[in-house]
Image (cartoon, rainbow over all chains, first blue to last red; front, side, top):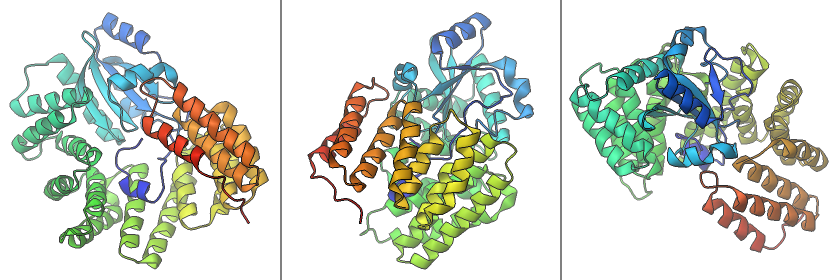
Length: 56
Length: 384
């Protein structure tokens, strides 16, 4: 999945630049645990930011 | 985003304003959430109201650090003051919510409503245009997409979003029906806009965003029957990416460019140029399936089938989710080229069984049907 690459698809190019795994981040991300993140957001009364990504 | 933006100290001050969740689309645990949020592109960013889990804001495609900061500020205000926004902001938030619910037509109408009311210099204008372009492209509404790109480009002058909008306009022009009398002129117009966007270093667009425009330019040259022009663009693409990779500050940052570099080299029919970088990435990132999976592709194109199969064998234990199907399909191609039709079929059968086992949100009926179609075809002859 990638939003803006119809021409790339026409060329048979199906990947996008790969986000690398295990990167040191400036933001305290919870990894792949929606229930935990949602509970934290409710407890802290903060909005929940979600990054949907894939390692490809 | 992950290697360049979320690592930037400029965003550290936002840490306490949200709870942050990264959702790997390959991970089965996230399938239900991806299904509910109608994730159709990667990356996609959401801000949810935790009280009722409704989508407050949504954005597809990558952002620069500055764009991310602006998005977060907009999200923070929207989440804290919902219902008190201006009509144009209310229309945009409604559009985001509808898009988050998978209601594409209703979301498009709401984005239009927002854009029609947008005052000059409205900060979310570029984000709203990007969202609507995406919806048009997902629904093959090429004429609407083109019209929006034409309208938006002058208003976005000087902004990084120009790169994406010009590219989208070009993609949509290329997607017009061949018999459309305005197609050639539209392609020329949007190709020129795309080239201008790549030639303007002051826009400050992200490197992966810039890179994504080269395949569109290559496709435009091929559409015009200009093979030499397409090759020239492919070489420029490879050069651009090589320079970006050379400037990377970590193996993670360098590897971000591997997939597009491989694609550029394949376009140039020079897969051997990808081998050193992929070997370096495999050594630097031993848990990542991508380097060996890409090595399998490069070696296959080089007709080095033993090396391709070995690389595929290294990738398979590390890959889960929809991308495992791609790796298995490539493995089938390699085995077929080696003349082992039985093993090639077994790899396809594994891919089909795996595809059918995926949960909603990861399962693709189109992929399953494509695999069934391949299994019904006679075995491919070995490569000569």
